[in-house]
Amino acid sequence: MADWSAEQYLKFEDQRTRAARDLLAQVPLQQARQAVDIGCGPGNSTALLAERWPGARITGIDTSADMLRQARERLPQHQFIEANISHWAPQPGTDVLFANAIFQWVPDHLTQLKRLVGKLPEGGVLAVQMPDNLDEPSHVLMREVAQLEPFRKQLTNAAEARDVLPKPGVYYDALRPLCRNIDIWHTTYNHVLDDAQAIVEWVKGTGLRPFLEPLDFPERKEFLEAYGARVAASYLPQEDGKILLRFPRFFLVAVR
Picture: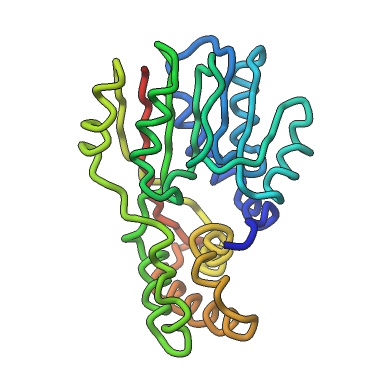
């Protein structure tokens, strides 16, 4: 896919960062020598790690040049490197691998999680959060519009960019032999947004990308109009006119 847009992603920075805060709160380490923010994006989650462990060496990794540019501007005192998580390994002595909303995009991510846990020292922590929202209207409607003409042929494989997450027990059984403790939970957020168009803007920075990138500009405009109309019909305003975006997320904290 084309590069991510840090500007688009940061339109909803506070709401997007909330899950990272909740994940970090469950990491049971008072001190850390080295912490890595996997899929660091524009550095919003990396800043949380730096605040939690001010004496640690903090590294952010991402595949997006635009995200890394923003992260370096935000946190110039920390290291940010371009790397694909499928081919990356932590340095010895890394205590924390923190991954907020990245592994849902990684093919065969369960194998990668097992590999990374195996690289941690005793007591090291892998902390992961992934959206679990493919059955929500926001994402069901993407797939519906992709089946319409004139988009069907170009978007045949768009829905395959993300896999449905396995059940929690699958993660537990895969990681338990490598870990002393595993904590798994789901949280469903209800984000208060101004209107239905705000939902479109939210997913334009993430889930809609595989559906929009194969299209030329006029087709993108047509797709967004069709998708936006369906979103407006599915997410009705509250009494004050605001919209609630229901957003389930999966969390996992594994201690080596």
